[in-house]
Length: 356
Image 1 (cartoon, rainbow, N blue to C red):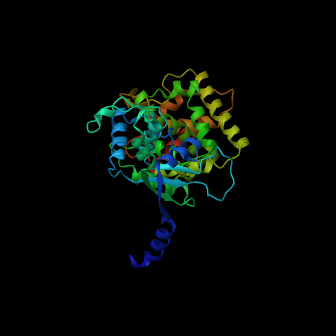
Image 2 (tube, one colour; image 1 turned 90 degrees about the vertical axis):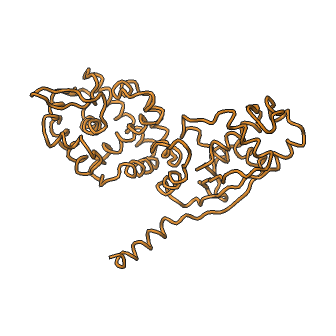
């Protein structure tokens, strides 16, 4: 069996092989590149779990003492010979954002050293307050980087980011997409998470918002509803959403404007329908509906696609929609392995049918 698949394995391995180059930058050069925006730190991809001042200071101490530090992984997004606006970054950081942020903040006098145990006499000092020999030592200290070729697509970059992300706190899928999928659609997502009817409708916790689950819900809306995208879903929601985000980032401003208006209209319809917890999950007990949770992503899938097709003047009859929970086939589609392709198709098709 394996022998018959050798060609396919060879081709896939060839497609997914990453070209890299080892490179060293002295800290002074790296800080200048970050300041000029040539290297982008992706501060938006990880909104939580920032390094403490003590942790950052220990990194600076390690650099002063010439203690080896881990490799920095950067992605070359734009070829060096390509002419682009100066404000567009040529490199983004795949792994090492916290280290480079700590270095940049200290060498630009934004932070002071704290909590040092070996060089404790330096505690409280900023970079420009260090003895001249230590300033020279830091400026000339090099940091090793592995530069990843610009030709790889967003899905490969996402995979690299996920594999390299070996810190104590694992990044969520949408945090990874924010680091690897760049474009106008990503900016649109960040705008739409502030839509008040949307915020009210999803009613999710602050901890989930910190994990960018609200942004993923906006992406999910478009991935499933735009051009009936749910029909092309074959499995692996993580890869499906990443592919859709990459696709939408290529759209022009006119198409994105239409998508934005559709989203705003859909959640305005929901607001006008005066539904409390529209994406709550219900089950039938003794011929009565009983609420199981305030928000369920499979229920969200079911409602957003028919919602996206409604006219501005429409109102959602939530009683008709929730009556679906009494249907055994539909209920199975919002239970268990909800990302199974057949379940996704079934729950959305059934919801479209009852709400049309």
